[in-house]
Length: 256
Image (cartoon, rainbow, N blue to C red; front, side, top):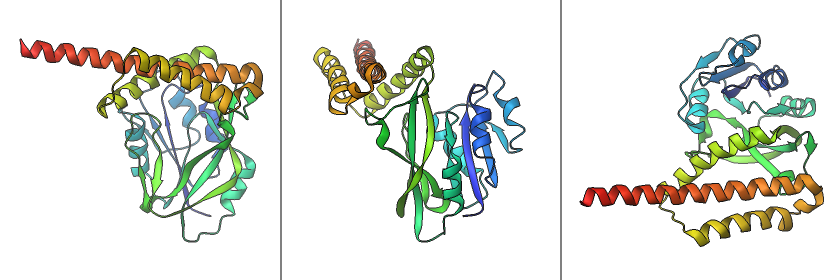
């Protein structure tokens, strides 16, 4: 396959940006969209592409949609700063023979503190990342946005490396941000919760990851991931409850 554009969105990713861009330096065009970084992200990205755009942050989907609109090639590869295209995946993509396929799922290999995690559902993680632009669109979600295509899809065989969690501190910061967006998404979809709902969702989240999806097989790593998932679920529903309370208070004031 020839004539591939890659899109990357970033904000304060100086720790990841070089390795990410090096792994896709073979594509024909890199569209790099920065959300007003305050670290060295922009400076570090400049040697890899001249197509750098600064765009005020309006959400993950909006940023990727903006990046997609700047591409000039029909085939687009979307990756995040904490991901790396392996040499084997690169060769697999370059050797693809265009047919009726409109999108390809990449198999992510997920890491926690440099440990490859094979439990918790992490080793069955396929993401639609290589798409025919004319058939593609971004899903309109506040968090866990993704690409979709109107057409046929296939899975590729080689891995996309994903350094998901590199430190407990950074992970907790990310969880705090993501759960705020998740709560807003739930609230906007008219979901509601109570004390029992908060506890039940958090407990079920841990049980699913640690027991049903075999997190115990990865020892402490699997335990940490399962706890992260439980915390994420708890915070999402706690923040949903907070939104409900604030909305009720606002409505009561309007009735006075």
